[in-house]
Picture (cartoon, rainbow, N blue to C red):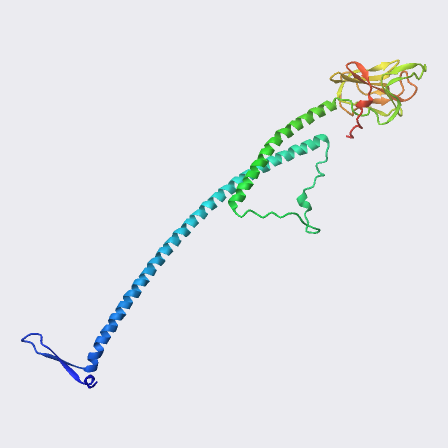
Amino acid sequence: MNWLSKRFTFCIIPDANSNVRKYQISGLTMLLLPVIFLMACIIAVLFIILFSSSAVKIDSLNHQLSASTQQYEQQLADKELLLTSVQSDLVDLLEQAQHTESKIAEISELEAQLKELIGMDTKASVKISSLLTEEGGQGGEEYPLADEPIALATTTSRQYSEISEQLDTMIPQLEETKAAIIQYQAIMQVTPTIWPTDSRKVTSLYGNRKDPFTRKSTFHSGLDIGGNSGDPIYSTADGTVTASGRDRVYGHYITINHGRGIQTKYLHLRQRDVEVGDKVVKGQIIGQLGSTGRSTGPHLHYEVLVGGQTVNPEPYIKGDREEP
């Protein structure tokens, strides 16, 4: 290995007119130069391989990133479309809710009118929501909320539509019921359905009886109601006074025409407060109870006539008059 310590001379002759250049290097250097060159080549090859691999990976990552970006952009676009659709559905639901609330308010108003017409206390109803309390027990089945807002909106919209259709059906029905009640009340207003006196002391029924004077069997064409002289006598329905006078048998008497072929008569009065042609309303005082004419004592002889023929007044009397 002595040649490693020897020095070798290299001469470089550029051309004939130039000086010769000499370089001396040791044997060790001559040995190391090829090794260094070989290592440099190996390093260069490894660098190229690593660079190519990294470039492939980077390219693959770029493709993945691009695909992910496109996917996210598509998802974002889908979400925006979904949000737009939900917002549109919510606007529709709001309009349906307002329309439904309007119909419910209309129905509530009709209900209140109907209750008022039939005499129900509209102040008695209580909202259930006002009774809500956390005290006491709670229970019941549980139903999960819809996961998708679109499904919830669609379901709610369908429910609103069904409710709206039902309300559309209910409103004309309630209107018809209201009209029927008004018509019924108008008929009842001209139908003699109340007691003509404050007293409920019936002294003689309609039909066959023994005459109080002759004790013979006779037909009694009305209802006798006993009371105190001077007690008020009430018209049992709306109508027009067609007769108001005094007779030897009837005493002071009043006849009222209620229309539809119905009349009422009030006999043996102490005093008459209405005259022929006067319009009277149900429950209005028309005279005073007395004992005039063919009478054994203070009482009212009350008759109901249908088509000019007397009928039993008892089925017509449904209740007391309403206090003003």
